[in-house]
Length: 135
Image 1 (spheres, rainbow, N blue to C red):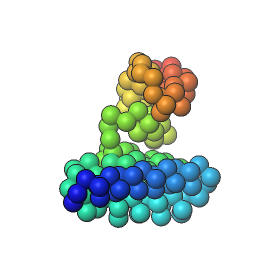
Image 2: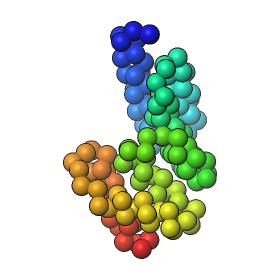
Image 3: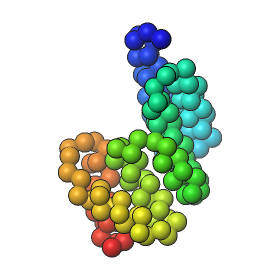
């Protein structure tokens, strides 16, 4: 697989992820699931070990929106553990499952995170509030 094909696949995957997020935020989990399926299909031919991490993040977000927090955590465990957005939503899922030990640990890690990234800006206030709440 050439670099151009890989670039196209990663770009198409990112677009499908964003469309899936938008569908989920608009309350259409069926459409979000179809974008997740598209992501899987796009990345399947790749030989990259991390090729489905973004897919698992979206599937986890869909499961959390459907209040299936166990499935959400299972999907988040297969996504990118360095992704702040993933870690935040995993902490929320643990909180909803009433696993305050795991939720607190993640919220505390996030509370102390101090980098200027868009994803962190989106979750910062909620993260600090939750970290203080679950202590």
